[in-house]
Image (tube, rainbow, N blue to C red; front, side, top):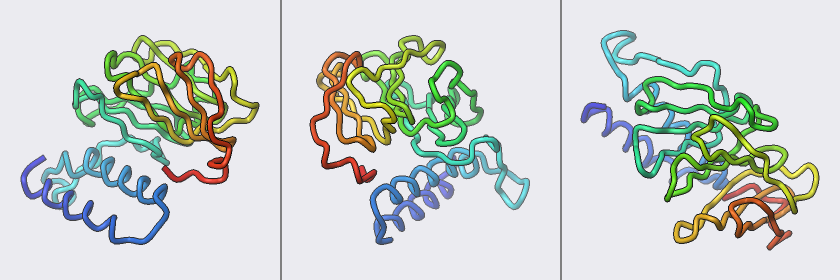
Amino acid sequence: MNRSDARLVCMLASCFPAIPMPRRFWRFGVALLVVASLIFIGHSGAADNGWTGIGPYTCYVVDAVVVDPTNPQIIYLASLNKGLWKSADGGISLTYIGDGISLGGYVRDVAIDPTDPRTFYVGLYGGVCRTTDGGASWRKLSRGMPEFTYVFFLAMDPSSPRTIYAHSNKGLFKSVDAGESWMMIHPGLANSSNK
C-alpha cells in the first residue's frame, strides 16, 4: 500500500465514529473498510483508474477480519454466508479453510490463541469450533450451550488463553478449559448482538 492509499484508508476510517449507529454495524463497516483496503486499495494499479479487484468475489458478507497476532501477513475472514477464509500473504490471495467446520457457511467470529496461532476458535450458528492445526481439522465445542446457540462474538483472555467468552443469542458464555465446556454467566445479553 502506498502512502496516498494509506491516507485514504485513514480518512475513510475516521468517518465511521461520526456516524451514529449500533456498534455491530460500526464493526461491520470497519470490517468492510479493512477488506476493501486489503482487496482494492492495498493492490492499486493502472487498471480501472488505479483500482484492481483481486477477490474473493465468492465471499459476500464479512462479519470479522482477524489478523494473526504473531504474523500480520496471516489474515482470517469470517463470512456469515461463505465460511472461513485465510490469507497467508497479507490479503493478496485467499483460501477457503472452512471444510470440517460444523455449519461451515455461518462463521461469525474468529479468536486466535496468542500463545499458539495454529489454535483458534470460530463462533458460528450452532456453537463454537476449534482447530489446533491451523484449520486442517476442526472440533465442535458446545457442551454446556443450549441447542440452537448462535455465537456472534468471541473473546479470549490474553493473559489466560484457555479462558474464552462467547456472546450468543442465548446469553454470554464462558469457558475456562479452552472451550471443552461452557457456562452461562449472563443471560441478559441474549437480545443484543452488539460487541
